[in-house]
Image (cartoon, rainbow, N blue to C red; front, side):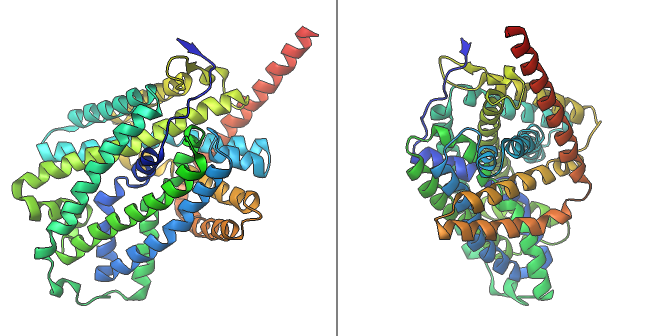
Length: 427
């Protein structure tokens, strides 16, 4: 059964923490530690420590806004309240149209690790990616109570594997691998920090699920603080293991975690890291599918997206319209990739600008909406400037949000015309 019922409140603190961790702890942990170490050497650990401290303000902005204004519209809703509904709708579309590409990219990344581990081909990679997306959609159909519980199990498995990799390699860590500590100077630490920024994006996704928090004040703020601490520690442990065992350099940098696990588990390490890749990327997809489907429903109810997206399941209270939209998008993206029309590199670059613009909108909203909370305003400004520093580097991918803006304006114009015609007929 389908209808336009309300989405149910079912996310407790453990599920909120797991959703935050799942959204942030993406495929970057598989790739970035080695790349950062190649840029800055052992001094990359300073960059990881710095980002672990800076990530808390970024996370808290979204946590504080979600606690004060819980709504399925997430960042789009915050921007609407802070500025106007037009700006909020545009930010919502930026996020909404990022997920149809970002989720398949995450799935193909996780599937790629698995196919390499098992020696499978490109066809198997697309098939595994499709399975990961289908599982995430299926889980979200049954609601965030089910999705949250599964996310807790998945995140616990990820934490176990990463902690095992970090602690288990301690006997192999050698002091000689930390000298020279800063082979490429202080500038390299700054360059490494810029790369690490991408590992800590994702807090904005869970804001779209805040309406389903049982106690938004508790889940949003406490959940984001706990998740930020866990994510920071996990990233730092992985980086420490990478540097301490010198599992980077040349072609090894993009597969540093593979080498770390191989040190620990021998030949079975490849399969272990393949499974880890699947878990990490599936956790990310679950969170983003939940966020995008609920945002689609919210935008449709506000007249900022086609009304068909507002359909919800009467039985589970889940956004059927949004999930169906994602199914169509995911199918198209995988078909394009599978036929070789677009490469993974191109797909990765497309949503960069839209994700950053979404985050900038959220931080700007925090500056206005958190007035009266001096701490909240300060961290909103800090997060805004940190994110703004990255935007000039998005390059040609800025064309994608321009296309989205054109589509959004066309939809709004059509909606207003249809509404005017309807009122004219009634009168």
